[in-house]
Image (tube, rainbow, N blue to C red; front, side):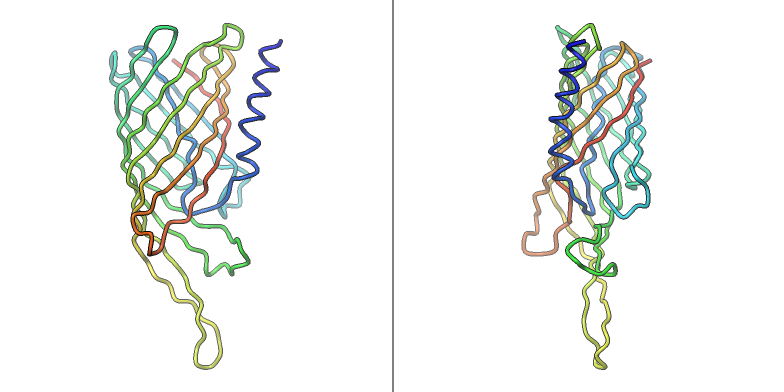
Length: 243
């Protein structure tokens, strides 16, 4: 079973950097859903587990995604990420090519909320938290069934667009009597989101396991002011089924 050994090696190489470098922030990479739809009427359901990156008391976050090829080229998709408090929807076009190659282009919107974990020795009441929304373009490309054994799929995605956040920032100060107090300030922060993702799927023709690695970079449009804290790397694993 040489293809299985090779696949496991690839998964290890993809996951290890994310395990070592992933952090915690108000915004975390979503390891976005990459549908790679190939024909009219196709429906794809996916469930994914993502390691906890915030202050949740659960070992992993769970996400559910749905994609539907409405016509020969029109498609819609949506994702619900309850533990990370994030929801998004998108619509666009998919274009199957020769050699099982597919490329897609979507426009979408997402809404979420997050809290930075207690790092750097700061007290819990100084933890910044905030809500955010984004409007984005997502471009996908990949190959379906690269090998007959294992039905290996390989996909890549780039999600990009403005992300507007409302951050609740706490600062500790000393009262006249010497006691400590905290002052909360809500500030607005706008950034440009760049979020590439790579995904590997393997299994059977319709039912497949997958592993994803995502990277995030936020370019702040207010470099002199408060900026949204965010993680750079994340990964996830899941299972999908095509109808």
